Structure formats: structure tokens, C-alpha cells
Image 1 (cartoon, rainbow, N blue to C red):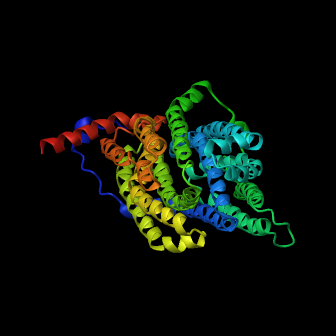
Image 2: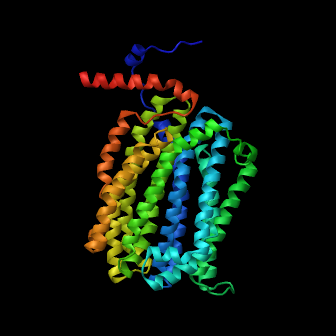
Image 3: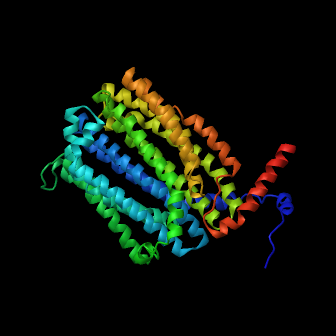
Length: 485
């Protein structure tokens, strides 16, 4: 048996030159399909909004507020997705098939529970939801008719997300991309048929958009299943293995996931509070914000590719015990993500006027949307950097640092500032909107320091745990050498 290297050998060891070519190829293989999938979804949302825009600003605002309810649902499931990516990517690196299947089964169970709760509220209590998000009666009525139908899409969407999480974490990123393509085309076609009454169908307006969303969600899930059957993907249909839960492993899963779940739920509630304050602005502002959310999705789509690449590549190396490789990749992924978001923001600002005109905004709505987009494209450079670092930490086993920072700053800084400015002082959206992101730069500095410390590497596999002490000793030795020189 090969003897482990002594600490002195580790400290003297020169770092191997970083292989940029392999690194960029690995990032591209994951990031590009994921980014394209999100770009397709965002494009579908944009087309949705463009088609609905012809029905008036109140309709745009109502559907935009319903989307905020969907985002709250996403906060409920995202904690399980983040925790699942942590386990699946590391088990994938260690080639632990039992661990992969068990983790997917836990993710699926938790996510579907969230989907059924939100679906039930949308179908049976839409009035409560709309009254919470806005005090404008005309907007409430439109939103209620939309939620009563689109609620059927939520379980289907979350089932697809659970399957996509498994596929991405095991580096099968093209399958969710194919499904997204079919889903988006279905959504656009049915919008054209149902909203305005083409091909002999009655024109049913916003209800047609909701029906199209439900059908698109069903197509997405069907394509994932069909492709996985064709290629004989080994994990998604092993139903017995999905629920072969072992007490200690289940406890470890929830212990590791709990901070992520807590983060996403509290963050979702915090964002809902912020959106409730924004929903008390004028009708023109609500419409401008609804249009902005579609462009926000475009930026997040670009970011999501790098975030997924970071989670999978870094998590896989951590699980396989290649801790130095994981650390070096993470250090380079974050600047790459920030640079990409900056370029995306520049392009959005260049074509912003044309886009807003296509979305039927004019006058005050146009001016407000233009200002909001400009502010966000600046903030997004830092915001997405924070997000990417947090996802990297989670996939590597550190679910606490990002959680503590996000929750503390959200509840002690952002929410009080937004509520005081928006509800008590009643400042204009030009002052209120930048306040929503007042914590980002502070968190970015703290997260960068934590990134370079390497303390976020916390394996869950035996291979990773076996290398952890040597990695930390080596990192400590390098820091000491830098200090003495």
C-alpha cells in the first residue's frame, strides 16, 4: 500500500501549472448547454410577455406578480436542489451509484411536496395570493384567472427540475436542453393559438397563456423521460433505489441541506416582502417591473451556466478527493462568471430601447423600466458573483457561510431599508430600487476572502474526507510561506 505523503513533502511541493485548456473545455461542456436552456426559457418568458403586452399594462403587471409567486415556490425547492447537487456531484465523482440514486429520491420527494403545496394554494386560494402581492383590484382579478389554471403546471415543472438536477450533476446537461427547446416552442405556439384565437380556437386572453404554460411543462417532462429511456440513462428509472433510504445517510442529507433550505426559504420570504413593497407602487411601475423580470431572467440564464459548471466540476473533484484541483478551479470560475455577466449587461443596455418598445412600454413605464434595467445590469456583476460563490461552496460541502451572510444582510439591512423607504417615506422607484441591492458589495468582499481561504471544501464522500487534512495542512503551509516572504 502506498504511504501517504508527509506534511513537509506537501509543503515543499510546487503547484502544478493550471491546465486552462482542459478547464475551459470542462466549463463550456456544462455551462453552454445550461446557459442555452435558460436562455430558451427566458426567451419563452419574453415572448409570453410580448404576446400578453397587447392585452394592456394591467395584464402584464398581473402575470408579472404571478411570476413572483412562482419565484417564491422556487425558493421553497431550491434549497433541496442545492443540497442535492452537493451530494449527487460528489457521489458522481466517487462513482457511488447507490448514493446518487438515494440523493435523487430525497430531492424528488421534498421538491414534489413543495410543488403540491403551491399548486393547491394557486388553485384553491388565488384571491389570497393576489391580495398579498398588490392592492390594485383590476390587477388582482386578472391574476386570479391566471393562477386558477397555471397552478396545474407547478408539480410538472418541479418534477422536471428534480430530473434536470440529477442529469446536470452527472454531466448529462444536453437532455434538459432538448426538453427546454421543445417546451419553449410548445409554449410560444399555444400562446399564439389561444391568446388571440388562431387556427379556429376562441381568443381567451390571459387564460390561454396559462393553458400554454401547463402544456409546455408537460412536454418538458415528457421529453426528459423519452430521451432518458432511449439512451438508457441508468439512474432516473431506478425507483426502488431512489427510496432505499438508510437512517444515517438521510440524517446527513438533511443536516447538510438544512442550512441551504433555511437560506432559500428565508430568502424567498424576504424577496416576497420586497416585492410586496414594490407592488404598492403605481400601475406603470408594476408593468415596468414585470418587463424587467424577463430581462433579469436573461442575465440569470447566462449566470446559471457558470454556476452549474462550478457546482458540478468543483463538487465532482471534491467527491473524488482532488481537493487542490477543486480549489484552483473555483478561484478561476468566479472571475470568469463576473466577466461574462458584465458583457451580458453591456449588450442588454445597448439593445434596451428596442426591447422596451417591443414590449409595448411607453411614457413613464418606458422610463422606469429603462432606469431599473440600467441599475440592475451594474449590480448584477456583483450579485451573480456572490451567487456563483455560494453555489460553489454548497457543492463542496459548505452550506453555512452563504446562508448566514444572505439571511443576516437580508433581514437586518435590506428589508428594513426597503420597508422604511417604500412604505413609510414613500420614496420614488428611482430611489427605492437601488436600495433593494444595498448589501451586495459588502457580501462580495466577505465571500471573496472565504473563497481564497479554502475552508469551504468539506467533502461528504470517503475519498474526499481522506484527503481533507492534508489539503488543509498544505493550504496553511502556503499561507505561512506567503506571510514570511
